[in-house]
Image 1 (cartoon, rainbow, N blue to C red):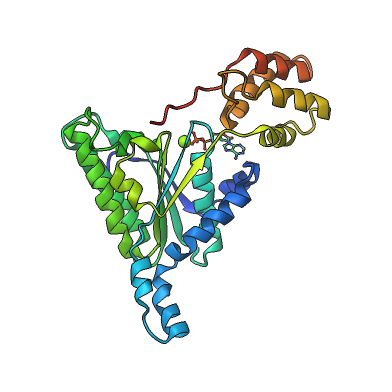
Image 2: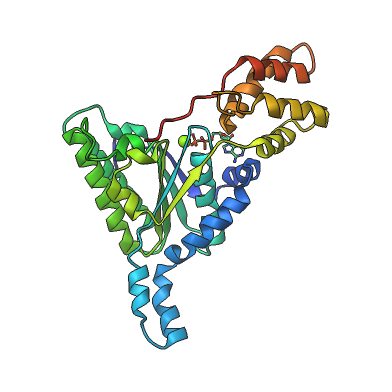
Amino acid sequence: MTQTNIFDAKTPLPDAPLSAREKTLLGFDGRYRKIHDQLRLLLNLGELGAWSKAKHHKNLQLCDLVAEQYPLVIFYGDVGTGKTATAECIANRLARESRTEDAQLFRLSNRVRGSGKVGEMGTLLTQAFHEVVQAAGKSRRAFLIIDEGDSLAASRSQEHSHHEDKVAVNTLIQGVDDLRRFGGRVVVFLCTNRLSVLDAALQRRAAIVEEFIRPDDAERQALLAMDLDGVGLTDKEIKELVAATGPRGKQPGWTFSDIRTRLYPAALAHAFPDRALTHKDLLDVANSLRPSPVMEDK
Ligand SMILES: Nc1ncnc2c1ncn2[C@@H]1O[C@H](COP(=O)(O)OP(=O)(O)O)[C@@H](O)[C@H]1O
Ligand SMILES: [Mg+2]
């Protein structure tokens, strides 16, 4: 119904490409299990009353307290550590495993920031929440991913915070508050590079706050072994790449996306189209490119 396309993506879930993608994310299963266990109550708030009656023969007050949880999950950490990919795949898996087949994933675009016209950002955000709520209707599920959340949800107390930004944060908070009436059928994932700039009221509302960090040696080794399968590298050669992409002095280790979207293409470009990809191609790039910088968080 809206003219402005405020969503980068609207995907009916479950989605086959997302189901395939989760298999390429290292450590996804463990992360999913952890978040799923924490989310299970939130996702089934509607059934809590029935559970209470069945198991305790009355409505426990405890259930009302738990029902006040907000359906907000915050993922934070450096660029390229997997926040967006994980949020999408978790939403997809939740939809797949919940018996309601009817779910939709919305990814909010940065265009929601608008063109700077007074009141525009708040209006676009209101529209976005409206559309998500419509999609959830009376019985369906909806997931909203707010990417690069720091640009929308930065603290209202920051000195350079403009009136416009404050309106946006208020709208966001109101939107999340309103979603509680869905009893867990609508969940918001907010991804941010810096947790410390997020408005305190939003942080307080989050049912889950999960940090994403750069891969350690073992994870980079597993990633390289998985991704470079078939290239014909020896274990020793993989280990050399693990070392070359690790932290050195003041320089941090490479992120998942540094390795996948910078190392591989650059190395491949050396070899393609005339010869096979070699260990040296990869090592040369690892030694000459720098990993993306660490986000100052505080
Ligand atoms: N756990 C992971 N295992 C393997 N690759 C990953 C993982 N997390 C992220 N990546 C890779 O890094 C890329 C960037 O991830 P993304 O979710 O966009 O990071 P962020 O949102 O934190 O900036 C992904 O497309 C994916 O290829
Ligand atoms: Mg992202």
